[in-house]
Length: 179
Image (cartoon, rainbow, N blue to C red; front, side, top):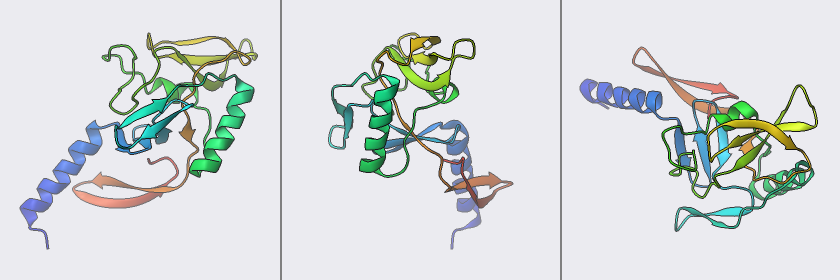
């Protein structure tokens, strides 16, 4: 049994960690706990190397038609359902204080400092899609679906277990948006 002081220290540590950390390394994937998204760590075309903890290979730039095939292949090979991120999801990865690329390379190594696709269409011109540029950290809606750009894939939400600290107690919840 855990002593009362040790229990408080453990709860405090869990609270500090969960309230300050956005990303948790999960090997091949990264969990963004603030936004409830699991991401592949590597750009499409590259693969995660567990020994070097880097992405190997060369990224592949895809248009929106080719992304569908890449998404299907990722789902078949890795399990789950992988998809193109929304503008808000991809923007949440931007690290303003980071050098170029404007993303935390501890969690997303080898990201190219250029525009990456989202699934979000421009409301004023439905033939154009929003992108997030990891060179500048800004978003743009100036690319057509037939153009080729790099892609990061998130996992489609699935129920998972998460822990929430409430008044020093740990409650286990099931939700489709935790981790």
